[in-house]
Amino acid sequence: MPERASQHPGSPTKDPFLAALEAAEWDDEPLTDEDIAAMAGGESAVCCGDYVSLDELPRRMDREE
Image (cartoon, rainbow, N blue to C red; front, side, top):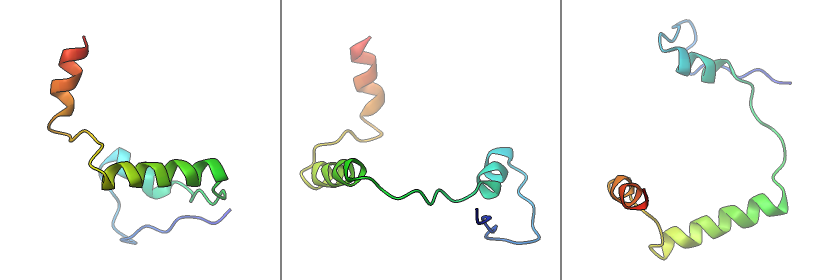
């Protein structure tokens, strides 16, 4: 499997999460028809305004408890 190259070679990342992301291999698995349909559905929903903003999300979550 191909290794993922860091965007900044020679400069180690101090954040352990970002370091793990930089060290991770690329996911080169092909998309399935189901994946493609889900992505198209999401894009369509965003274009139609059918989404919850990050500002609204906590308010909605509080109402569901």
